[in-house]
Image (tube, rainbow, N blue to C red; front, side, top):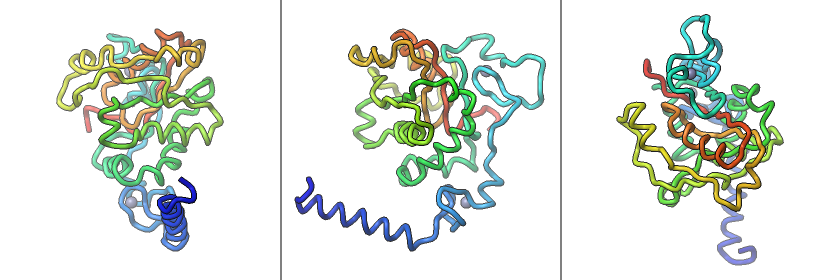
Length: 251
Ligand SMILES: [Zn+2]
Ligand SMILES: [Zn+2]
């Protein structure tokens, strides 16, 4: 492309964008109010977003109201997930929704490093033992419509920040899963069963590795469970998962 008119134009556009970034004040990742530094939230959004911290379920990361005797929630006791530990940065609610939607639709490239840094903090423990980061893939039809897999952008940014390798194509989504919206936990599990597969040429990459799946929003964990199962079948020694936000029934 270099040397062609299109290539030169995209170079000019990139330079213009860079110049704009230098002139315009950095904006809040959620509401676009000016803030002091890029990749930050304004004080109001910072105050409204509910970050998830301990006490929480050791397995799925579900926050507990109070410290409790058992470290594992009822759902994980009843249906132990195939992933080891899942952690999310914040609750998915009215306060965090604009941030997530903006990242999905408009602000992918700018917000990814900041969101990845938050994921790195929330998942510090999980990342200590990680060999490989794997984004949860979209089915190619959805990828075609959206053009971006936002989980892959997060995994790439997190890989740059931590030095842990990432593999965007270690998992393939072989079944287009209809939207999970409005489905209960049981239906979601059925909906995504057998949805993922490690392509044969990627098996050597996965074999014997401790893998961390990267996703944007964690709902019931059914998708992560199905993706982790596929990685374990391909010889991964363990699978954990990290996400930006987590849907909670109470929200
Ligand atoms: Zn804000
Ligand atoms: Zn749990």
